[in-house]
Structures are given as C-alpha cells and as structure tokens.
Amino acid sequence: SLLVQWLGIHLPKQGTWISHVMGQLSLLATAFWWINGNGEEVRWSFEELGSLSRKFANILTEACGLQRGDRVILLLPKIPEWWLANIACLRTGTVLIPGTTQMTQKDILYRLQSSKAKCIITNEVLAPAVDAVASKCENLHSKLIVSQSPREGWENLKEMMKFWLDLTPLDVMWNTSDTGWAKSAWSSVFSPWIQGACVFAHYLPRFEPTSILQTLSKFPITVFCSAPTAYRMLVQNDKASYKFKSLKHCVSAGEPINPEVTEQWRNRTGLDIYEGYGQTETVLICGNFKGMKIKPGSMGKPSPAFDVKDNPTKTASTLRGNFYITGDRGYMDEDGYFWFVSRADDIILSSGYRIGPFEVESALIEHPAVAESAVVSSPDPIRGEVVKAFIVLNPDYKSHDQEQLKKEIQEHVKRNTAPYKYPRKVEFIQELPKTISGKIKRNELRKKEWETI
Image (cartoon, rainbow, N blue to C red; front, side, top):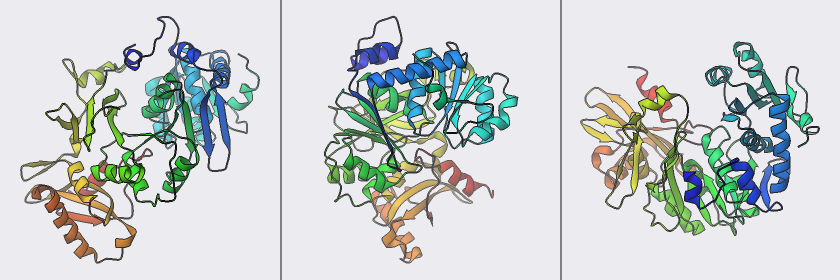
C-alpha cells in the first residue's frame, strides 16, 4: 500500500494487484514486446497478457494443485513465459522464487529444500539437473517444462496452454537484468505495469554492446535500465552511427557508476543516468529521481521502506532497532545525498587507512588506457594489506610496454585522489569475473590474492 500511495495509484482494499492495476489499463495498449537474436518477435496487448496469464494461472491451480501461499521456483531465461509465470503467480497468490539459469545441480537442490517449493518451472537445459535432485525434495510435487518437446515426468507448459481456458502508458521499458534477480520483478514486471507501460525484452545469451546499441536505435524504447558495467561497455563503442530518437530516461543500479562514465554517456546521448541503490530484501533504498539535482557518483536520497517476510532469524540479524543493516559502507553529505563506498568486506585496511575500491576504480577509469578495473586488498608483510588493481586495457594500449604503463597509471591515481589510495600492485587481465547481471566478482579476485597465505 505504501508503494502504490507513493506512485499515486489508487487500489481498492479488496482483490489483487494484478486484477485492479491491469483492470484500469487500456486493454488494447501494448503491454509486452519481446525479440531475440533469431529475428523472432512477440507482442501482447494487456488484454492478451491477461488472457494468457489466466490460462497459466489455471494450470498452476488445477493441473499442479497449488494453493495460495505455496512456493514456485522459476528458472527461465528472458523468454515470454517468464513474464506469464510472474502474472500467473500473482493471480493465484502463490509465491514466486526466481533463480538464475546459471544454477548448478547443487544450487537447485539447496533452493528446493530450503524454500519447500511445491512446483518448479524451467526449460530443457536445466530439467536434467532438477531430475537429478527431485527425489531429495519431499515437497516438490509438480514440474513444468517450457519446451517444444515432451519430457518424461514433466508437464509441458506449451501443450497445456493450448487447452486450459480461462512508468506512463506511453513508455516502452527495457530492463536488461537477468530473470533470476529480484531486480527483474521490480523493473520488468511491477514498476512498468503499475504505470501501464510496455515491457520490452531482448533475449541475448550474453551481453553484446553492439546489439544493445542497435536495439536502442531500432525500437522506440523510452526508458533504459542496465548495470554500470553495461554503460561502461556501451560508452567504449562508437555510438555516432546510432540515434536513440525515443530514449528519454536512463537508470542504473547494482554497483556504483563512475562519474566519468556518466559524463561520457551524457555527452553522447544528452541524457543523465539516474543511479539507484537497493538490495534483494529492500528493492530501492536510495535513488536519484526526476526533478532532483544529480550529484555524479551519489546514490541519491532515500525512498519509501519495504518489509521482508520469512527467515526471521536472518532478518533479525540485519536489524538494529528501527534500522536495517545492509552490510555496505557509505555516507550522507550535507544535502542529504547518500554515497556508496563499498561492501563491508571490500574495504581495504592499509597502514591504518580505510580505502574503498570504488574511489580507486573511479580514478583508474579516467586514464585512457583503462577499459575496466576491479580493486581488492592484497596481503603485504609490512602494511598488512595494500591496494591491488586488476585492469582490462583498451585495445589501443595492449601493445604498450606494460611496466611503463603500470607506473603511468599509478602516478595518474596519485594525482587524482589521495596518494595513499594508489594501487601498489597492478595486474593486467583479459576480462574481469562478473555475475550474470554484470556485477564484478571482487570476492573472487580477493580470494585469489589471499589463498596462498
């Protein structure tokens, strides 16, 4: 209720989000627009989305026997059925638990057992992993597969759908985050459809900057949401041949976005990037909103609060009085803007100094040789820890003398931030380890540095 009041949406006290919000929208307006790399395209109006999701909901309640409050695990890539499953679960009152398609057999077993899910929905890629652990999951009763071919022991969603019967409305919203994260539920379902906007989806097996630019240029996308890593890669491409005629609002979340990247994006598109900060348990905690003055690098100002259901022991460990402890480090300036420093375990303690990786990475990205970087702690016999930078070079600099380049980059950081923060160790690598949503896996790099101790 707090969310819809904040957004200015009126919802009756009885009924569900999906019945009342979608009931107020123009049935013929485009609700969903999906493409993939093979030239396939799907477009649904709100009326079609409603009809298809009702069929899906009937499958969950009738064929699968699910009741309100039962848990459903959803492991699908960015295909249309992912959105139908979201709406079907809202209609039936079942609890959706999304997961990334990169899960291993062990990951799936853990989630099935810990969530006590009664149903799992996935595709032919992950079905074998589910079958391998299903016998260990006593609560799992139904398995739905999204596939053109049948599979023994599974109900085929596409076949069943044939038989079971019943931002602003002008915007086209494209959110690139993976379907396994809570971010997709917010930016690919609730947020756009509360406002009656169209959800745009482009199914790419992996992030391809050229394809992203072509899509932004070809389709009338007005709102673009992506991770900072994506923006960093996009500004390195030549965008002169691409015109984003419809694009009017860009947002980013997941990790801090460097002011240098924001400036390059603004210079080439004329648009600011509105940065936000949140977690799975909270959605958006701080954000830069329309009408606010943007301070480059800041997370913005606080947004309305959210509550967390279930797992009371873990939740209690994050609460101190009325405060939620995020596990992150940051500060608030005199104007009430919040600034991200790092995850608590990313802080580098060197000779008594506390150094956040983001401030070092922001200095590094301003050097023309640096395409991407990740900063972590590295053991040192005298200082305890020192700053180490893993750097991906821009193509034009890969043939340069690397020792000389290291010295140049180190001096550059000394000139652009406090000298004690400069990376005493530098390693050039081909690519940085990242999550499926584009976040840098600093913990993996840090583990590599410390595993010999």
